[in-house]
Every structure is written in structure tokens, then in C-alpha cells.
Image (tube, rainbow, N blue to C red):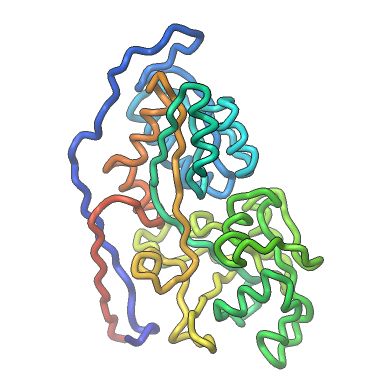
Length: 319
């Protein structure tokens, strides 16, 4: 397939069956929320805030009496809050460990975990940087600090040292890199820094010619493009190859199609974790994200929904 003359289109078919509702009576207490009304705060890793906002706004539009107040923070803080029952809902990039489930059960609550979709772990560089293909092995070397200069990846490059920037030192993005890319080895290199948010990563990379940013792909889609094949214009998104040597024909960006067929190697699952014995508003919102309507929102936002029959077709464009 000639990548320069092809566009990828994805179709999504979802069952329109009604998602199961919960009719259990709520225990007496201070909470007054129902599945479709009331006000609650929930927690999400900051790297997922764009997609969470889209689903939240649509849910509140459909249920005007429901008010969902998101707290966007890092994954460690969110997991501690869900374990300590400081929140009833957490959206993050991993499910609960058996030890965490057992701990929550000691409080006479059984947690529920909803896989809701997938996004890609994207690598971004400055708009002036046209060295945008990298192998998985080179990515590992850069993120571990073994490779610190651009000419170690691209011989002859005059960009100097590589600055790697993450969104947060305790984020789901960083934990994915440590656990799934680096095999559990901690990041200790002095050329790797943490910003305060995903937005700051994009801003930093857009102003720093030698930087590589590590960010969730849900931050990058150009909402003006309904085919989800265009990223933001102020940075370049790197293509990644599983081959020994990367080139434009064997390297792939985190588009929906390449997350689906596995050509893009860095895909992570997004989860909604619920500890809501009342099965009220937090439970209802998590169910909504997993429902056909919620999955369609995820699909239209450029991510890969967890549910649904997805079809891909390649259209060759004549010039």
C-alpha cells in the first residue's frame, strides 16, 4: 500500500440495546444523587481529560439534573482516593490489582471495573523537526536515558541533546512507560523532565526544537477532521516501527486504524473504576461511557472504543 496516496476510514457499528440499569435501593446517608440526577465529584487521570469532558458534557445534556464535577489529577492520587473511598469513580489506564480489590472489599464494597476504550501513547516533536520515525528499540533507549542525543538515533543530526518531557511524574502516561515499555525499570535520567499537564507538554515541545513529548493521543486529534486522520498542526507526531530500522513505509502513527490492527505498538486501555454501593450517579455515568452512546463519542473523538464492531477500509486517492 502506498501510504502517500491512501487514507484510512473506519466504520463503527454498535448495538443499540439498552444498557442494564441498577434498581437497588440506596442506603440511608448523606448522598442524594440518583442514576440521572444530583451532584457528585469524580476523579480522572489528567491525560484523559479531553475525552472525559466530551462524554461528561453529553451525559449532562441528556440528563440536565445530573452534575458531574471532574477532578483531574495524577494516577497515584486517583488510585489512593478510590481505595480510601474519597471518590466513587476513577478513570485511569489500569484496572485494580488483586490486593487493591481485596482492600476495598474489607470495607464491604465490591468494586466494578469497566474497560471503556483505548488510546495511543504518542511521541511528539517540534514542528521544525522532520526526523519523525523511530523504532521501538530506539524509543526504549531514549525513554530509559541510554540514548540522550539526536545523532545517536539520526547520525548527522545537529539538534544536540534530546529533552524528554512527560505530563506528570505520577501520571498514567509515565506509569505506562515504566510498566509496559521499560519492563518495570524506573526512569532516572537527567534529560527526562515532568511538566504539570498534557497541555504544558504540547506547549513545551512546540517551543523546544530538540524535545520529545510523551502524551496520550486523545490530546492530539484535530477536531476539524471527522476522519480522525489529522493531528494538531503546531507539532509533529512521530511514527513508530517494530522493525530494526524505521522508515516512513514501516512506521505508524497512533491513528484509530493502527491501534485496532496492532501496527502502532503503544496502545493502552482506559478504565472506569467504580466503588458505588448506592449504584447512583457514578455507576450510571460509568455505564453510560460503556454504552453504545458513550462508545460512539469515544469513536468520534479519535480513540478506539472498547465495544462495537469496527470496520476498516482503505481508499486510494488518485492525484
